[in-house]
Length: 124
Image 1: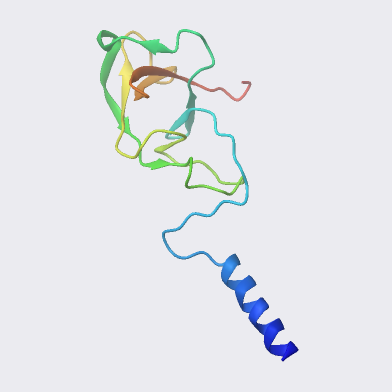
Image 2: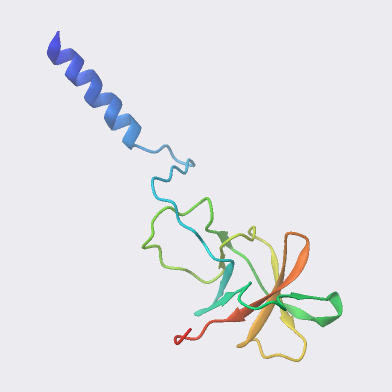
């Protein structure tokens, strides 16, 4: 009887540790900053007070978000890929900003506002 109980507990433990396809279970909480990754450059929003721009400041479409990491990535060692974004849904349009090189800043709609994302340099 005791061996059946131990086996049952072991099976339940194994099932709890397993993850069904399509389910995300995080045991680690990651506090993401609002970023987008385009190519090998990471752009971050909210570092400066002038992070919201007007529609007239938008340039042409530059890229689209491919993957939203918040709520989908639990591994703190995850390596960002081209098209990843912290909080933007896949398909979100990323725009150039008029008067600024794309190597410096981009923009996207976030929570109903047009938000500037500034390129991070290794020293930042």
